[in-house]
Length: 500
Ligand code: SF4
Image (cartoon, rainbow, N blue to C red; front, side, top):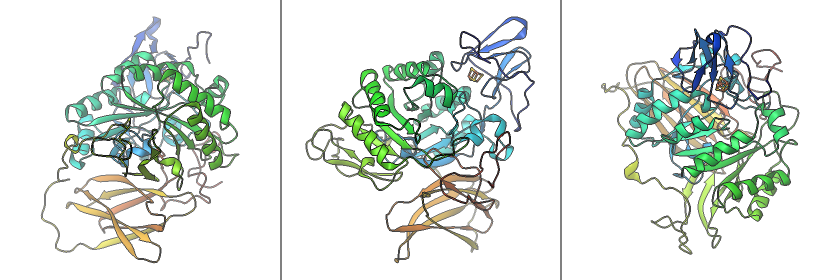
């Protein structure tokens, strides 16, 4: 229920999540009469009586104080690349450590991470516990220069994001915040103290679309985006073009005009392809031609950098010099290579400076050995898994649990059409530890990937449908009957099923 000033009451029941929640003092709230509280983290400003939770399901009134239920409660920590987050002009090709959490201040009909964003559907099996110190330690151990707050939406993880990013910053690690940014100005200002990069998803410039499809409203998103840009933060904007909903060229022009008027001509704008998910499965994936038209329209409006997202095999993923058209950065899926830049980050052809941030190798934390040092086993039997790319599936998450005491490696080799295999990633995992990482298609003639690990590793393999998609159902549990909508399928009123 919304009252007239846009303030939304919390659910009218005592709230008990399905996962093991913790109580951590929340920031940004005020006390009301009769032990009620009002949250100031997102523009909903939920009012809650004792026992009630807010719209997001992860902030609750406990005996007259507001607590965060999801502090340190996360999806499995994962290694991806910065391109996964619709960030093309900050440290191209850099690895990131991605963390999602539970809950969201929106409820988009097409959410691709609904199984973690909608607190009532979250399963304990998908929730892991981390401390801020442990997250930073993992980044340091693995030499990962950026922590990315992503997936469901990090706005509702405010306290954990602030605490962790502060420690990370002191260790020379950057923070990236990927969000729909339906956030109060006060909270956005706090983030500016610790976050370096904002990748903001503006769903549409149509207020009706926001209200009907996302259950939020537009002006706070635009205000907060302007605020972080004015604070000098690196900002990139993305727009998920949902088939037949917000995917016209006019939609793209309006968004490009807004970026030009409120941010800058050199702010990258990404048009991302949608896959049917959650309650929005009655249409197909967005046709690529519509994304290409949107990109052309944004460039015609005067933006210098417009890209496609969730697409492959198109030049529209590459960065061209706005001065002479020379190709500067080439991207294949979520991989990036600088090809036309000199040592100073200028176009090698016309010497125009590219508006982007290059992380100097000196700024990257050195990788430490992962796990406790123990003598290696003389010979360890290996298990082998093979996965073939198919249809729209060009990326995997590999989650490896080392059940033994000795550290070991998960090695991935690319299977090349008619030419055997070529080496790819090798990820070290300490005894009794686990790690998750993305493997994605790189070469056009690549058929799939071979994964090798010691026999005492438990391997879970997940199909990744699009970037910033956190899959929760692994291939050993079930496989979808098509490659448009991942499992679990949403079932009305239920927790999601594996079969239609
Ligand atoms: S963060 Fe959650 S509790 Fe706070 S105002 Fe937003 S939806 Fe309501």
